[in-house]
Length: 336
Length: 94
Image (cartoon, rainbow over all chains, first blue to last red; front, side, top):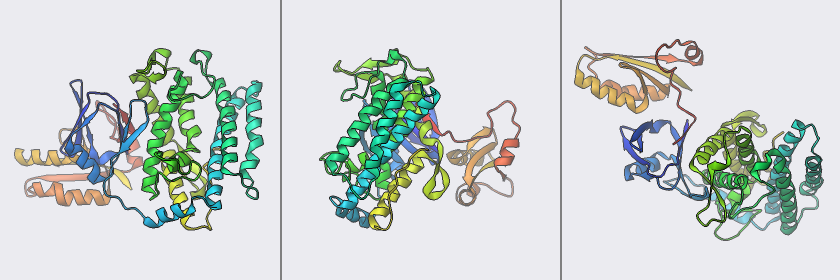
């Protein structure tokens, strides 16, 4: 089934004979609505009211992003929500079970970050000593995240997450040729092309995980690790942790290594401080993200191969079940 | 299970033909003038036949056939001078 990304300002989308008519720059393309599962809309794209009504009525997930890739919102028609799950979610905040869940989420992310570094380490046959050191540093912190008899406080957890993240992003630079000037993570605004890609990708991933949380009956705004920061979709930020490295970071690495991008595909942000993706970079990157999300991987809890986008949803559903049934345990999805 | 259905028709009356084509195009990919390829599961196909496609036809004069192409048949299909059997794209970036 098809995901449609509408990236070009000036595009007008109409509905005709059960199909979308997508017009841009005098060219028209049709796409049958029956084959659509997801529509991602960037600024400047116009959907007629009939199109919006059809998308709502058919329950086709429609996500709107900002110019910098951040999540703006989504179309929400009627949906089958489950109050039992929400209630369980509210009850679980500020409990030891909630904190244990936060441990699992952070552990999942850190493990997957380490897997990415290890992949590069194997490729370079262990010859980059800083890479080896970073892998060892992260490994040293993993047991503390895993030790259920002495759980960390939320502050301690954040501390370890921060150290691992810094180590990871610094080590990640060995993936990228020097012309990309990547030395670690920065954001708001991103100051180099790699950080621009990462920020953009996390925005897209956030939008996808937001949809998955709603589909699973969860409240996107009440989390366990990020907890209860106001105005932020805390649960979505929680749930996407384990997927950041394997979806977004991996897509950035693959895209840069495939040598189709160069510095000219990026532009200064309107305030002149940061770096933004140009339109070619956006299109290529969205394609690469989609390839990552479509990649079939073994999903151990069900012992079958699912695409990463399906795994996102299954993990959200699993979290919902764990909240209701305390006998179940949430396990992060970790790459081997 | 979604299979690819090959749907073809013979319709004598132009008006009926146009109405049928319009309805087929809602779910199927036109590959030749009177031949369509449709990625559908069987219940959906049955429903479309009954509710949408057959009602516009006059079966004493017209005919419509639908052949299933499973994965094996689809791979063995030989096509010359037009695109390979239809498959909805995974994603489109426009």
